[in-house]
Image (cartoon, rainbow, N blue to C red):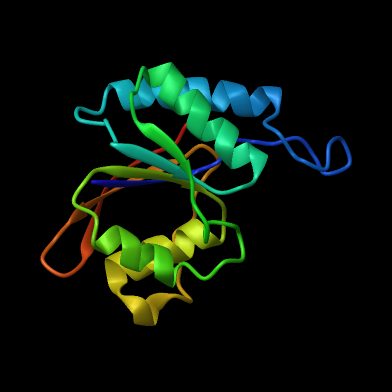
Length: 151
């Protein structure tokens, strides 16, 4: 399984240019953990995150809140405006379960590429903050199995 996760709510740029998670964002991660506990098998081997603090914090809080022993790894190519094609290729060759914490529009385009193919990069899924989309491998593509909305 591949889990695409949008970071939780962050403070504004004016409040803090590094944009760490807000109180609301931390609450969203707690709620996401509650919902993910109900999903049998949510146990990624690794959690990849972008270099932005809100992504790293969301990954760390998810791992902590769920008691996961997954490695948390900074991964290039996961920033909002990065081309998701390279990440799609890397995930396509993964045999392990991976969770990826990132941003829009990158995640939405990545989900479209993975489920519909490379020609569908202009169409994308909308990810709510702290939302989790589970993808399972099918022969040559991926299928969206479920979406957790932590609103």
